[in-house]
Length: 186
Image (tube, rainbow, N blue to C red; front, side, top):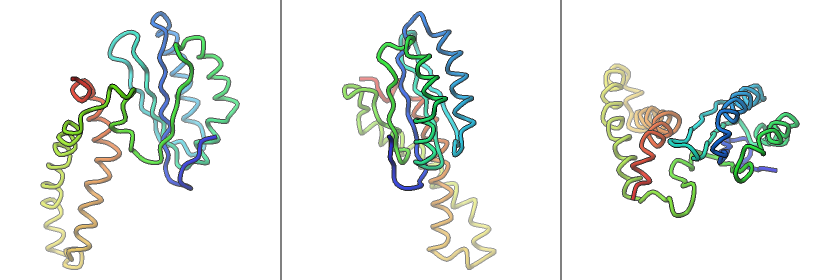
């Protein structure tokens, strides 16, 4: 059974290496699996990263509101039936891990595929710089109009939330998918 920190949002990352001649059937199965997972209590969202070439891996990222919700899905009869249906289509079985955060942004598929830290730093810098520059400018009129919000602590909390949430939930997952070729190129 998968366990994570209490009731924090958790993520299930499923990695399926599909047999080359079974991808069309896998796509139909995947559509049903995503729909079924979406009906589960505590399901928040799902992203599917399809392989860039035939024979590559499908990575499905499913977020749940709590470890309890994730456990219920992993242990459910519905998922067990879905997995028994898909196993004949896979090279090496149903592989999955869980994460209590978005720590998997730069997690490689294999140890030899690790992104160089300098590339991770460059991508993070490029994503955060425009937000760190623009968000305070956008909030500046509000801080001037309402001095209580302009307090250094309050204003920094507001600006930080406006940077962290889009970076964690939208921008970095999108950017790491879009730039995976560059991140992992040698």
